[in-house]
Length: 185
Image (tube, rainbow, N blue to C red; front, top):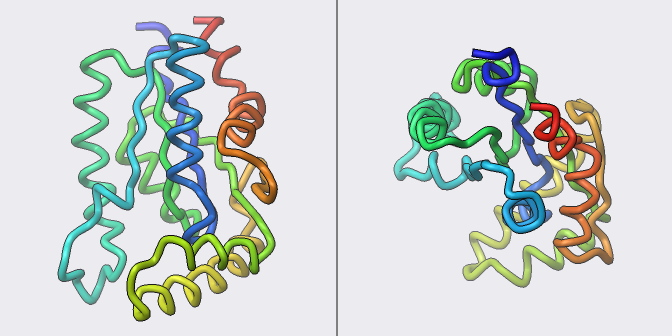
């Protein structure tokens, strides 16, 4: 097995709730599929950790998400995926370490999506269906925007204001360098 086969390039798209992580991941997937025929998988950790009720010691089900990711990645790898796109908030280095443990050989490139808070809040207002959900997401978005900016976990920051998902995706694919990496193998 070559060194490249042991490495698993992972694009982790982070940012506050409502910033467009999942939409951007899907746009990147389309570029990799249709423009480059690069075998890949998208695992939205929000979906694989979605369970109710949450445990008090793990209120966002992060541990469940990492366990599920390990199982899902094993299946994707078995059918030929070469890399992963993971839209999900990683709030600290510990979360990134758990991601590395869930995906042996992980080489993580973190991109943080940003937009002015009022732009992000307008997006949230357009998608949330209940007052309680809206209020929670607005508060969480504000908190995460501040915390992620302070922690600087990312390798690159991409401004999403006034950009379409395909434009954001092309910028990220270019900065990630996955097409060039894949061409070398």
